[in-house]
Picture 1: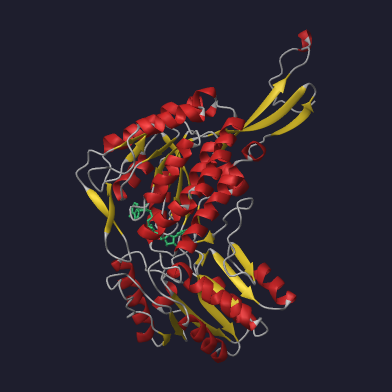
Picture 2: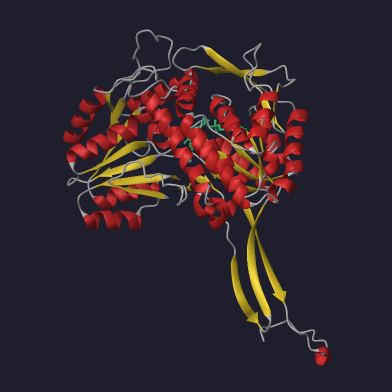
Length: 520
Ligand code: NAD
């Protein structure tokens, strides 16, 4: 640890070029502890969704540059895995402190590149910070098991060993939280890491990498490569990468899952969702309406746990009227406006897609109770804004129900009975989250037992578990065996090794037995 004392380290950071290129908008890769400008001539613009201003550009990293990032991670692995776990934990302690101190800087970057409100951006950072806090206790989480004297003079114990080079591929919607679901757990377990941020909002990953190095993470432990499909495919195919964490859409997630697992890699793939909230007639009206509006429209609906579908059991009219009233009161504005409730969606294409799905809903018979598609925000006329939109009378065969909309659109469905509502939710292919709003313990208990979703909320609209549990999406929302963070996250990034040892005075004349050894 002496070699990576913080004072030595700050020198190292200063001597590297910054991740922001001074002479152009291009941002750098991070390879072996240095921010390196890519030699690639191709770039993708990072665009502020409220203004259309080009904030920066990511390079389409070359194959050689990618290989050098993997080589740096591979070379660093032996020394990093042998670095005491207490040292690795201390770096996480320092990192969580630095993230707190840089919360505003991170949030402003997120709002500029992704569009969400500053307050929501702080929540994005905070939910990732909690994973870093959890990683501070890795020694306990990574503990093995021991059974003494499994046979005469023989003990068996298991250890959890790091895998080697792991990689993470990120979506645009949580630019801080999702990288923080990945690399802090992986590196504290003793792995080295290649991070591929979303090409739409890479800035938070870059700031986090600077903070990680300032916290004492040695050169080469965390590497960052930018790009799109080609770099992702290179990650899937690379023989030196042992495991991939992916979060994003089903199209990309299933492609990565099959391509990477065909080469023998571990993959955890968190994907799309359609989260339902069942509202029982006995639900607390005020609290339920607030929860539905917040969870449906927060982050402009661009959360994988957004509660995008409300299933009203029994009479739906009065609920819908009140929902519309509350949704109308939300303020749509640039995310830096302190009064904004929701900012823009990520891109012009995303807005078009959202509007098309709303249109398809009305064409197939849904009623548009609130239409936010033509909203104009003064001063930000070019922004990709969509105001709160509510569709009612939606049925399970409609495209707007079957597709993940990923925008500020709340879909209302009606069920005559609780059983019908549960069946409706269970027939949906996704299984990320589902919530019930009720004052009946019996209804809540039935819901939690019968609902086929991996994360269940009881009067809680967005039941994302804290990091001592895991993020347990299921059905089409997840591919793999071991979920993100919590105990499963540690298992994902470690290989179990079981040792059987014999320490006894061996009898000389026992002879040779070729029978399968059994416990004596
Ligand atoms: P996306 O799939 O378009 O992009 C995610 C990553 O995959 C990016 O880094 C991108 O460069 C890469 N990628 C995209 N298409 C690819 C392809 N064809 N081949 C190889 N790589 C490809 O997802 P997004 O639009 O950034 O994020 C939104 C999606 O993520 C939504 O579906 C949302 O539900 C999901 N999401 C899920 C969770 C979860 O935990 N379940 C969390 C956040 C977001």
